[in-house]
Image (cartoon, rainbow, N blue to C red; front, side, top):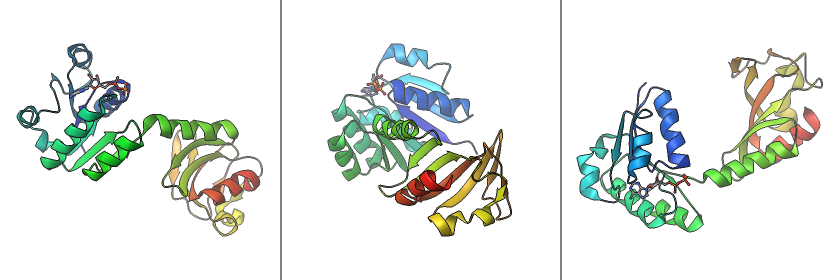
Length: 218
Ligand code: ADP
């Protein structure tokens, strides 16, 4: 289903969010105070406008209230990011996602109602650290401080066995959400699903359980 997004701030983060949403076929309004940046996004957004997103009247005239999601990706100007977030929530935008620069910024936008707060550098750093320490880990997404989703490569240890035989949930407390096999993804596989070597297992669980499975089970 096509959704309507507005992206405020077309730096590295906001810019790549904007391009990706647009390439996925969504409607994207791209906003930045910098004319050159806006010009660069003319072909990568539905509408690219030069505007100051800390001005309420500007936001109103852009019809920002009609957007389901607004991503605030204003970089170093924390004050502008906070003010913009506050205005968007006052205008009743349903989903306001904010890129935070630091913990102080995070706390403030959380207080004023940001619906989701993203720390791209920090999150990516955590993910990269996990790939670095283990050749088995393909991807890692932190869901909370205790729970994560992890993608692991199936070794000969688990190959040609069914999920039931491996009994990962009982032995390790983690659940297989899906299996990536080449271009295919097997979602919520049945217990009789055979695992092949080089399959990528998508697992969810407590960090300790995932670690144990990664070290001993696969
Ligand atoms: P990143 O770290 O993601 O590369 P940048 O700091 O380079 O972020 O980019 C932030 C963008 O936000 C810049 O292009 C800047 O012009 C834009 N910006 C800053 N303040 C405002 C504002 N009040 N309204 C709209 N865009 C803004």
